[in-house]
Image 1 (cartoon, rainbow, N blue to C red):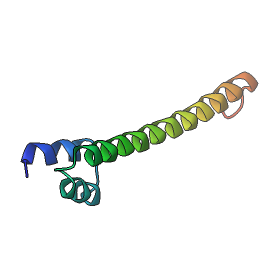
Image 2 (spheres, rainbow, N blue to C red):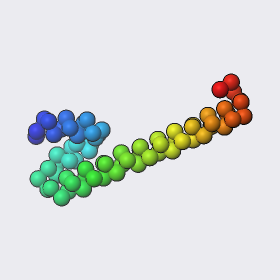
Image 3 (tube, helix red, strand yellow):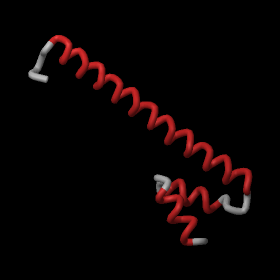
Image 4 (cartoon, rainbow, N blue to C red):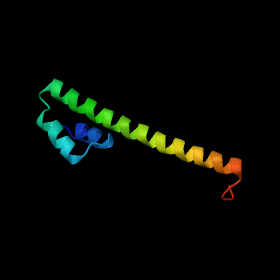
Length: 72
């Protein structure tokens, strides 16, 4: 197995289980693309959830400043 491919998967946040599953399917291009697309979607979902968290915090900070609460 190509060490740079494994390192790239690690850098992309893939777990050891994902990498094992991916390398087991390395000869099946369609399956590999499916696995990578699935992982990409998972990462985007995590980003969107964090964006929602940040928006909630921004709103709370805005409201506290507006009402001059909490010393902000």
